[in-house]
Image (cartoon, rainbow, N blue to C red; front, side, top):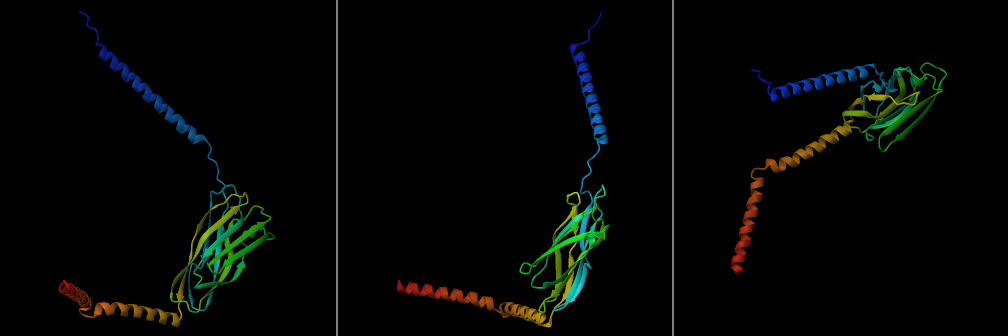
Length: 248
């Protein structure tokens, strides 16, 4: 007697085979995609490297009424195909009530590799807003600059009535343009100035703090001061209520 295989068993075996075939096809497709990605050359970005700007020194001390100098340093080693930078631009921001820019000396960082290169310079100072913008461009561009050197030396004067404290001179915007006209990514670090304030400003701050503390202690230091105000309010309300009852 011959027993035939149930149709359900044959169907399950067929479904399992089809699932295995689909899985194998998917694995092969993924492997081919990975191989294709691995062997496609990646494009070289024009601004793959990073240009950076910082101050030298980054931390300094200055007394009220004195001047001090900061070198603004620019650093770029070009891009991955050897192009250097031929344009620089930086905007600084500072407290105009504390600092005044008294002198700017443009340096020749952009002339790296060509001592005869001409550097076109410009600056713009907004004394009310406390901002300074410096721009430089190299001509001829050549291969551009690939070095770490000061781009400018800036002299600041501290206000004669400046109080003691720690102030920041901040780089709020910066740009380094390659000879290929592509911008590099930039990284900036600010400068911090510890101010030794004037005696007049320190005395004024001390008097202001003393007055504020005195006003607080007047309310907090008199025993029953707050309670007396509350009691007076209650008595006034009772008196008004008594007058109203008598009129009725």
